[in-house]
Length: 182
Image (cartoon, rainbow, N blue to C red; front, side):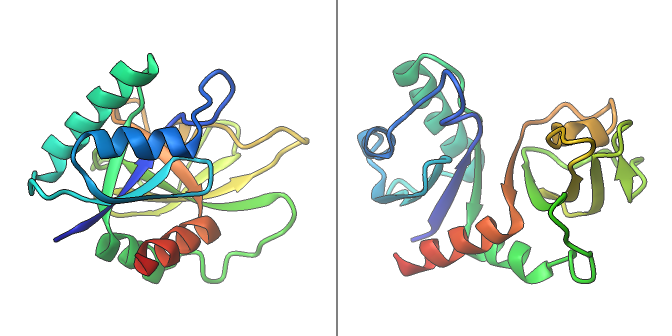
């Protein structure tokens, strides 16, 4: 049975606090098995005995979370194998890291526009997409003038209408390791 990794957007940000015990219980209410979570940023591991496909499973989980929590929670699902491919790809090799540079993975609900030329930068220059797959954008974020890195979709182009949730690259590797432990 497939182990899924749910990467939730907008969980445990101001005004949207959810304890991980509650989040795990909400997943279990859907009949999902082996439900575990990793850190407070909305990463949940589980199996689906019903064998639903990715789109149906994401829809069911998102609807249940919206109803239970009172706010929308975009759900981006990856298998452990897909997450491993993201970590193994490591397009950040050779990118100099300083205290003002953040290496991030944006998990996407839909691919970036085919017309988007990489590398692509936000107007402010704080978000640079250096590589992408069908489901991920690899981002070098730069803190400029002490201001935090902006939302990744600023570099995705105006035609992109999907959802994204971002994890630091090193955190993505830790999420993978935790998912494999189960």
